[in-house]
Amino acid sequence: MTGEEIKNLINAASAARMNAYAPYSGFYVGCAVMTSDGVIYTGANVENSSYPVGICAERSAFAAAVSAGEHNFAGAAIVGGKGSSLPEHYCFPCGMCRQFIAEFCKEDFPLILARSEEDYQIHTLSELLPNTFYLTDIKSSENP
Ligand code: THU
Image (cartoon, rainbow, N blue to C red):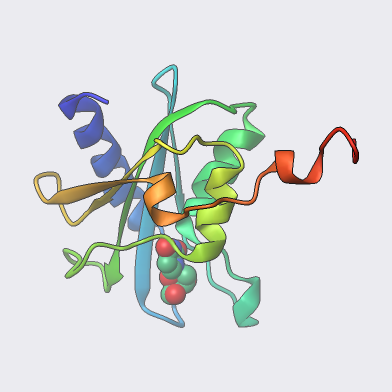
């Protein structure tokens, strides 16, 4: 990914974060995922009074992209933290979201964890989710 694309993704994730619905945790997260063709889809966390019903920003963003027919992705940015001001820390995706992303993205897929346009770190998916359980683990020649 180019520096420009990384900046665009971070800005899209920050903007999506403003739409987070997080009255219970006060933790606002935005995610932006870019397809291989350069199209950006975004999502925010949406909480619920029945807590487990809520959804994370990452799954919101990827579900939006997949629902639009996209299956090929180049990278994703995540911006999250308490309140609506600049996040104090990098927001790592939760385990469920790592598994969700792994359904569609390869081991070297870059996840950009950002506090701002200039302040970010990049981790590959396999760094965050080694030894992933894949579709190929379910469907084998003995078990088609
Ligand atoms: N959350 C996300 O949206 N993404 C993450 O990677 C971590 C957690 C949300 C879920 C919940 O709405 C709030 O942050 C606090 O856990």
